[in-house]
Amino acid sequence: MPATNKIAFENLRAEMGRKQLTIGSIANSIGMKRETLGRKLSRESPLKLNEAFLIVQKCFPEKEVEYIFEEACSEVKDNQRPT
Image 1 (tube, rainbow, N blue to C red):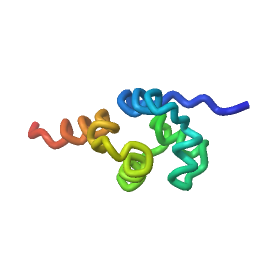
Image 2: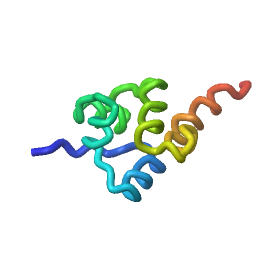
Image 3: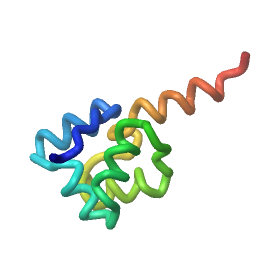
């Protein structure tokens, strides 16, 4: 039975739907196991910056990485604000 990870990145989910891509097809295109990518996209494991860029480059070259992974980018910006 295939794993059913919940993708934490809203824009990524939307673009996957538009292109009818699965976690497995993305994992295959970047040379990663489906289970590993599923954990990363559900934020159970950390997604490395180079992995995010590779996903965008291989699967969504017309989009910006900041759009596809908007939640992660927002978190970084929030952490840079002075307290």
